[in-house]
Amino acid sequence: MQRQRFSHQREEIYQTVMKSHSHPTAEMVYQHLKPFMPRLSLGTVYRNLHQMAQEGGLKEIAGPVTRFDGNTTPHTHLRCICCGGVSDLEELAYDAALDRLAEQNGAVIIEHHLTFVGFCPACAGKKGNSSQL
Amino acid sequence: MQRQRFSHQREEIYQTVMKSHSHPTAEMVYQHLKPFMPRLSLGTVYRNLHQMAQEGGLKEIAGPVTRFDGNTTPHTHLRCICCGGVSDLEELAYDAALDRLAEQNGAVIIEHHLTFVGFCPACAGKKGNSSQL
DNA sequence: ATAATTGCAAAACGTTTGCAGTAAA
DNA sequence: TTTACTGCAAACGTTTTGCAATTAT
View 1 (cartoon, chains in turn yellow, red, orange, cyan):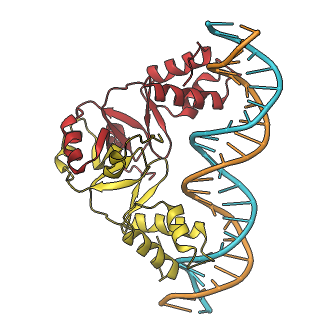
View 2 (view 1 turned 90 degrees about the vertical axis):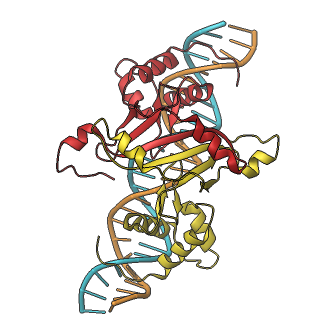
């Protein structure tokens, strides 16, 4: 990739992801910035998020809808089937030993994703929650 | 969901996923069956895969493109960044203890997904492989 | 006869891209 | 001045949906 210049848009997009605790989607970043930057386009958000993810400044969380994480160190996620949100599970550290285990059959492992699915603490609280899965 | 009737299409779709070892996508199932069932529609494939996944007969593997797995018991996957394929990692058993660990903060865990990313044994072999990530 | 299921085609959805204009270096 | 970057709008690939016809019960 070519050498890059400063861009006001990229800076704002980056700050939005870093300050957010909700692992925002591209659309969420766009909606958050649109009031302040009315001419911002969704294409620009996608382009910059993808670019920063490639350069390691952000992390992509694959799923039905891609989310972005300002925390690039390996860690564990919880996807709530009630509210649809994604949160971190700091308690569960990344276990690099698993990668070595997975290489027994000749594969070369770069990383692994460990994602829990269930009800986040907030949703587990309110009873009668109708799963949106 | 309402009581369901037998459907030749659903049966073929189910058998295709069960017999396949490649964790096929909806499109792959459709392409496989089209020669034998020329009037089959992609919408029917999607409808039936989704229905069987809800009823527990199949498993959905979320990703950029959704794949389906005939093996509904919890197990580990390897997504190859070279060929794009998904394969099973039988060596790594599902660790239910992790779910209990993840519940420390008040969450209610139903399951977890453990997916390794890297080069599958086949792709790790051939050198000069250009990653398609 | 009833209603679950189908094929079809259109729409919805998230995402990417081509292009001409704008702005950072 | 150069060219990375933008906004815009059109295109893309995947998935869903409305509907009238079909088919299992």
